[in-house]
Length: 290
Image (tube, rainbow, N blue to C red; front, side, top):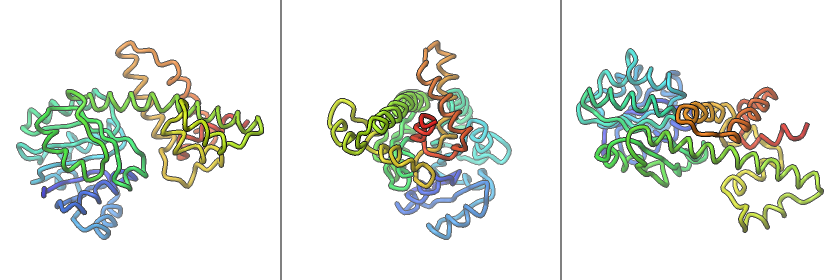
């Protein structure tokens, strides 16, 4: 069992840190809102610290799941960040969906300081985090990955090292590019079925057994048909727009064309304007109902 810090107790990080504590690790958490950290301790045990640096002190592993590149820099290399106190030979595992650029930047800083950094973005949404069934795609060096993988297993169903530093973030971009087109296709298909007078559930029961099958279809079609996007545990439109922005920026840097992704990103902007910032990504269908 390891001494672990977990930084960021949002809808993903809160249950992920809980799985580490339940697995028997000694977990110290940090969250910008102290009340959230206190609630976590009351639910799971462990302890909390008032800065990332204090949380990371003496730890073998430091996990993080925060909002974006700037948040990640703040809790790592910023004042009071975890990098101030991490010990030699320890491993920082970043579950934030961020840019490959910041992953490589922090990997270099960590190595200079004598510890390691693994970029490890996740897929599976809030339900995946709560069920301990996330998919984790990693970038970094083999030895620290091998060391951290048993801890990651506490909240994941699949974890793989894709390549060097930044490769995990690039893989997550591929994941989000695939999802964007699938969700738009599902929205159009279900609205077409509805306007054509078909029973959407019967349609999905048939076509999900064939070439049209996808995870999005099987797990989101009822939300699309029912227009139920607000009280479920999916993936918020705001988060998807952040992720697609990262994809489009990276595509511009490497000269890749993402016309469908760019279009769907603007469709999500329409959903945001409708008040759907926290709706699940399957809410794309709402803009088709005008």
